[in-house]
Image 1 (cartoon, rainbow, N blue to C red):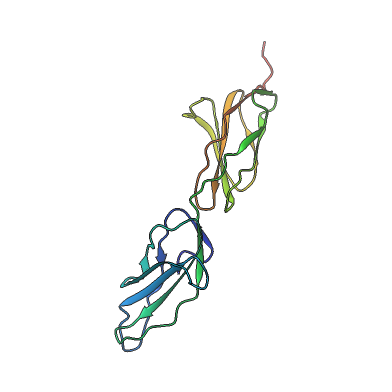
Image 2 (tube, rainbow, N blue to C red):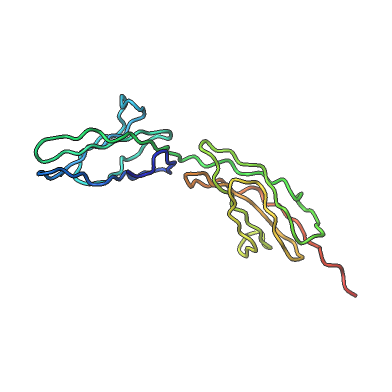
Length: 193
């Protein structure tokens, strides 16, 4: 069965299962149900189809339960499969807020630790994207990091003015807005005469 039991998915989901077998009869159809409760008292989507996959259409955010059963051409119906769940998530996380180095800081070491406050999300932040550039448009990016669910990264940089920002990505792949842009200047090299 797919998606994996307990998966977090973005705005649409495809359900898939393996083909059933039956001695002496073909299995031409499958019944699929998606519900908002484990007892299937509130069925959100129900279909009978000749394939081993379907998309149940638009579903609201939250946890959904699904199951499938086979119908052979002799009229017999299998028991329902085990019930699996998935969580529909279309809400992006909040934007992270930068914490250090301070906006406009002048730093005298080349290795800089960039930090930010964690974003919040209804299903959890999966990763952070960190961009460091020497242009305000970020069209020439020196560093792009994809971090796990942490809120800091140490990066080596040459002497110059840098702009940086961070955005969060949740477990369903929804991206937050970018944080505000902060600057810092690296001035690790002494002057020469």
